[in-house]
Length: 379
Ligand code: 2IP
Ligand code: CA
Image (cartoon, rainbow, N blue to C red):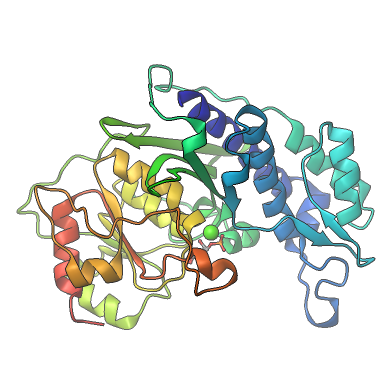
C-alpha cells in the first residue's frame, strides 16, 4: 500500500496547486472572494464558487485514486456533494473528465459560461504535480485496497482560505489564523474496524518566497507494528516540566478555557483556526494537546491527521467518552479512540459523520492525563 500513500501525496499536491491557482489567477480569485448578499446571493449559482473549488478538488482526488485503485472508488467520501445547479436551473454533476478540454467544457456549464475561469481551473486539475518524496520507498503496508476507505477534506478552514490573510509566524509558534491554517486532508481507514491507517496533510500556504506561496506536506502510516511518519516525534519533555500547552478553537466554551488556564498559564493556552490545523499543531509539537468540547468536527476533518498522531505514538479520542471512562495504562490510551466507518443513523446530512462527543488529540499520554484530570466535572 506504499503505492497508495505515494499517489495520495501526489494528488494532495495537485489539490494544493488548485487551491493556490484559485487565489493567484484574477478571474478565479474574483469568483472566490465575491461577496454575495441579499438578492445577489447565489444569483448565478446555487452554490458559490468556494464550494465549486472544494468539489473540484474532492472529485480530482476521487478520479485519480479510482483510476489506480478501482476497489476503493465506492468507498471514497468527502465533505462535499458533486451535484450542482447552474443559473438555468439545470443539475450538473461535477466530475473530472478524460481530457482537460472536456473538464473545461463541463465546468463552464456550472460557471454559467465563464470560459476563462473554466479553462484555468481545468488546466490546474489536469496538471501533474511535481513532488520529491522521501521515506516512502521502503514501506511495506500489508493491506489490500479492498479493505480500505478514504475520507477527504478538500480544503479545511475554508473561511481562512477565502479571507486569505497572510500572517507572519515566528519559528516554533503556531499561526492563530490566516492562509497557513487552510489544509488539504486525506485519511485512509480500515473498512471493517474504522481504524485510520494512512494520513496525508498538505498545507498549500506554508511560507512565501519571492516567487509566491510554497506548500508543505506531511504523512503518516500506522498499521500494527508498521509506524512511519514524515515528522519526527517532538522530544519528550521532562515530566517535572510544569507547563503544558493546549490549543483550542476561539469559539470553545468559557468553562473549558477556565478549567485549563491554571494548567497552561496565559501563554500556553492557545487558539487557532481549522480543526485539521490544530491537530497538525499537536503533530508538530507546537501544542501538547488539542481539546474540542463540541461535536463540530467531522470524519473528513480528523481521519488523515489522526493517522499521523497514531504513527507518532499518540492518538485522538472522543472527549465525552474519555471524560467518562478514560484511563491510561502502560503509556497508551485505548478507550474511545475515534473510528471512521460508522455513521450516526439517527442523524441526517453531514451530522451523520460528526465526531459527536468532541475530541482530544495528543502525542504524550501523560499530557493527555493531566488535561483530562483538569476537565473532569467542569462542564
Ligand atoms: C471547519 C474549519 C473550522 C473549524 C471546524 C471545521 O471545516 O476547520 O475552522 O472550526 O471545526 O469543521 P474552528 O476553526 O473553530 O476549529 P471547513 O472549513 O472545511 O468547513
Ligand atoms: Ca473541514
